[in-house]
Image 1 (cartoon, rainbow, N blue to C red):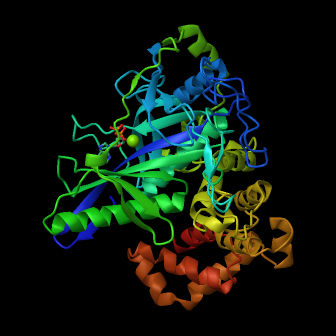
Image 2: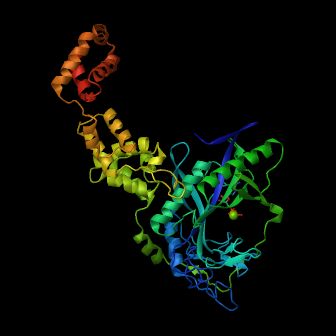
Image 3: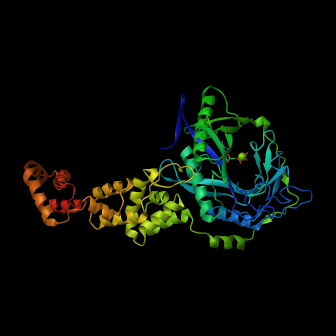
Length: 506
Ligand code: ADP
Ligand code: MG
């Protein structure tokens, strides 16, 4: 179902655009040789070169490795890599920025990474493309500390000049029928998780929101269901948690709906999210919008990227989630939906592949168990250590699920028993599925003789149903199977019961 918000004058849909910043993994900064390691254990202002400190006459030198990282991420986003892009100065004054400007790639010029897309599972359960407009390289700013001294604010410039890659989603305003953009809080989270997964699997960034190596600006607008035009958006800056992002989107959408329904108009403001109340408030209005006075950085030449560099990088890429997805469909026969669910994170894919091992016949049943049983209880999976740290997490070993699935296919247990064993495993019962089965006497009756006598018994006791079945009410087969299962305490092999019943009933 498409996500909508019910207002007092009708239903509204959301339009969401994300600008995601990921900190690029690299030994040194984007334009200087200083270490890019700014983590809190590093003493303040010990990783600051003269370039980072903006000493007069110091010249930036572009870090080639950061460029390669951007290309790598671009390929992971299925994006075009620009052969030629430029750097410009974005001017603003703030004490965390010694230069007085940030070197970035302005929106008017081609950025290093152009149009691309990733795929998520949309709210309707189907795979959905999310278009990417661009990704560009820019410098990060330093960090201000307001609580280190009673009367002074302190600045730590270790992070100043570290490379960021900003990834911006695309909204096709010329083509209103195209809905390849984020339309709900859940989709926003899924998109960000995908970005994170891609960045991590490529080694481009840790993309860890808690540590600040992934941050997002969240653009939200609303429109009446079915409207062709987009509404006016607001932008909530610098969001650093999935939970806050989802709350902010929903709050902001409701705020805008209320304004419009009360006859007002939304103004294109920059918002601030208040963590404690879960609300957004205006940080600056459009009239106060900063004029960054972008101009080309005279110290930096245009960035020219040769085809062989792109091809050399492409050849070293590990298997991306999208490629894994395609392989699960073509080699393991999974549905598009199952394949997408199992490639939402690298850990999940690895878990799945480890359970399947070299027996591809296990793939489908294992996918079913994972999706309908494990995912139904998110506490069973370590999806995101940064937001689920406090939860008690129980993980079934992949080899145990494999064993359980094999026991079913070898007719040692039936589906009902497997479920019992599975629940016991979740509840912390120790031992392998086989040991649990032995301990609780869960063993399928596959002895034909015993089943035949149970069938005979049921047929003898239900003469009128037998009559009806024979006169064409074949739907009654379920009744007979149920009766035999019941009389055998659920232990009979249902397939065998079915087969024997059909033989006997003619
Ligand atoms: P800026 O750089 O001024 O923040 P951009 O035009 O680059 O603006 O857009 C930033 C993000 O906002 C993009 O992801 C874009 O898709 C999104 N966006 C643009 N218009 C809207 C809208 N009407 N509703 C929601 N998001 C929007
Ligand atoms: Mg912006």
